[in-house]
Length: 627
Image (cartoon, rainbow, N blue to C red; front, side):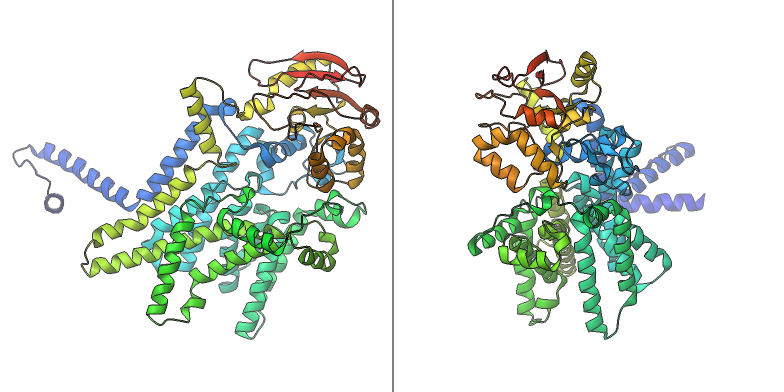
């Protein structure tokens, strides 16, 4: 009892809480219990406020997507719904994830090997869950991967200092996980801190478990976008250690080999196509625009400020200004304190050089000389975009800000200990700036910022009391509409094309297509499909260049409305002609043409209108024709 009263006395004096001495002893105990519970909760929140913010944001996002569902969730279409999400649906519908020698009803029938490997962790989601749920689950999982990877890495780097800076590590790891980067390969971006942690553990510890993790790491990555660069950077690090330590670091070398083997085993289908098929692909004929020196410099500057849409990290909004101020101040103090060596050894400056180097490589990709040298050195990688080093910059930019906030926090503590003026206010600055960066990421519109887009479009529609031109996930695919069409025509897998919308919509709904989007397929099919669309290419120089010089989108083009497939609620075109060669269409076994446009020259093309179809929940009106 004396201990209990002593605790009450201490709490009363520390928090200046009045106690009613005349209250009965039972009430006193109850009041004190409530008071102590409140104090503990208050202190717990003050210590873990950043976790409360993260938990609150994730809960709000989860509730939002549950309420919105497929019909009111707005997800980026370009290079997302129109290709990868649909590819996973094709694999699942055709029971082809682990199949060999199976033909997928896309682009007139392609080998299953052209689609994504079954051994990526992201693929596993689409094997076991419905597509929409898989996409949402992937979003939250990539945030958790980034969050806990960042924590693991920083605990290893900061060691005893980690607890002091935990708030910054947790916040910036979470912010990195929130970045609206390429969704289909979001695990690749999110797991980069995990890779660095594994390599550090291999180098410093050497336990077998870390070698195993190195071997398994590629399941979270993606070879085409990250693999060669990761292996290249590790090799550079291996050479650096060799020079520095005057001996071979076999641990790092072994880890590099294991990661390489992991990539090869996971991407065995891709390597079989590259080295065993013997057939040219569209990558062999892709034409890359050649820039002048001035254009290359402009490209480097642009990507330094904005990055590219596949990894639009939004660093230009808040991170870049904060970095610029920090860069000036950090190096000013190095010079003032005559710490000249730190100008080239400070991790803050080294990371900046890494960012610049990635931007320079990106720009040099459009140099014909550099590209030619690369393709002669490694002929199998002709057409491969070695400028994807830029995909590492999102992590580097936000690491720069993390370092800046940690140093600002140290400076604030120093000023506080000196009882400097405004020291108390300065101590709040690091957390306040970090939260500002968090808001800049969550509150900026971008192609893959699905949470922002969902909130914005739904709010806009509620205020305007009208439908937005932007299509939701459910509207884009319009499952009910196409199920009705398939039932009406007794559809049995006949090959078709889409006009006025993405052919991925047909593929998603179980309709075989001659058209489609794929960045890697045989050149022979590209040539065959070109015969179908030759009339439209002859009328549109833009479409001809788009298809002939690239060709990843084998679509039905308009002669006058380039990009007629862009997803929008309203489709208005003046030229309603369909410009295709129907004989070439028939030779590819094409039967149906699904069109959002009532074709004006159907009689000339000898096309028969099967029917006009609409659905209350779909933005599409489909005119279905057959040859």
